[in-house]
Length: 336
Image (cartoon, rainbow, N blue to C red; front, top):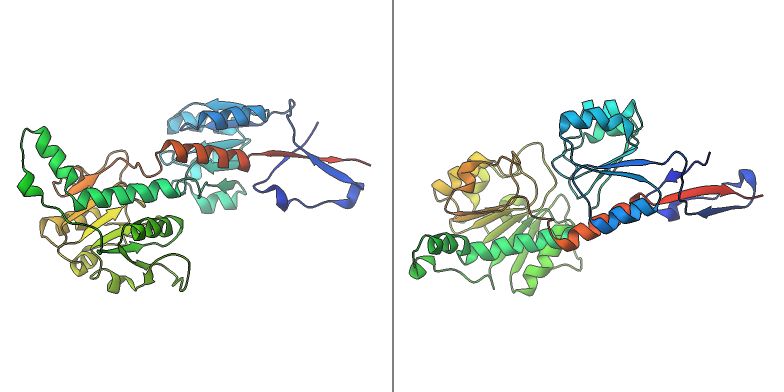
């Protein structure tokens, strides 16, 4: 029976001289076919490629209880953000065939990474696929807030013509404070800079002289300077933005969260909005999804979307292609 290994990057393979001269070839293995469960969907072209590799594909959404029943029978589990891959699920999968979990997206806070590592179950994500999509959504929310687009839509649909009530502000010349200066933060900085905004950022690191617009500031120095604040950090166990941070902001400031729910304390956000600590907010991610805080969703000074950061045709395509690279099969064949 042929054995094959899964690798993320083919260039990492090394020759093994045990059997003399060797070559690597792609395989379509009919025996002992690997079984992949795609639990929250995947781009159609990517599914076709995986099938072309010879894999058995189960493209079906299972709730947690049903997933517990099937997890022992699959080699690879592909999930998005709403499938909870906890210790119990990982342990049961480990007792069966499960060798790998792939997150079709960036954040892995729905996966118990420490326990997966303990069980030697590999976990991959697709960090490059949705960078532009998330940055564009954040920029879109910024423009919505600046021009009161969300408010005016609601007003007009209610039969009101409130042109005078929705005087907006230009973003050119305004200061954008970006918290979290990774791929998405840097991408947003370039887009906002092209629109004439001044960029300041906060991160664990001061990136210094890099080919991206922006200057580093401590968080407590950034908050009172920024006209718009956009958060792009990973998931954090404790809120980064609490009432004390809101108090430091300009009363005219807007805050945008397209990172992870819980990065902003949702109760503190409502307090800040109700007490005019800030002017408005745009929220794409919530602490409890898919059942978000209703007060935030219905607040007149908040623009909301249902976790749409990576939801574009282009991002879905790139996610699928990244996953086919992760799961690309390589057979090590020994030739004397």
